[in-house]
Length: 134
Image 1 (cartoon, helix red, strand yellow):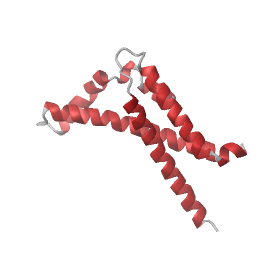
Image 2 (spheres, helix red, strand yellow):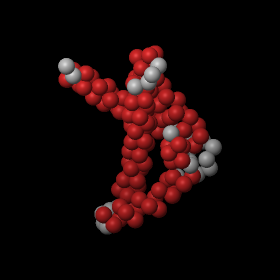
Image 3 (spheres, helix red, strand yellow):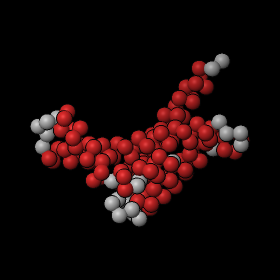
């Protein structure tokens, strides 16, 4: 969550990430158009949103599913999802105060989709593990 908060700072604004991604993309694809370059940059940033929250989803699922608290352990999926939703909204709210960033409910939706995907993967892995155990 600290890493996500840092990524929401001005250091990771679109202007700053373009200074890193643009030369890298141009090195890999030297003849790429400006429109395609902008699209790749945009998609890379959205994949980063999805991925950050997927990692948060896996870590929170693991923490809640193995909790010593019986209630938390039984409701790990709902608790992890609630954490992901609350943090995604809080993250965008934080970005609304950073001058070089913009807050977007669509980014929150991408964040939640990443976290929810990870929770479903974790649940599938957990169900498979339980089915295979004697």
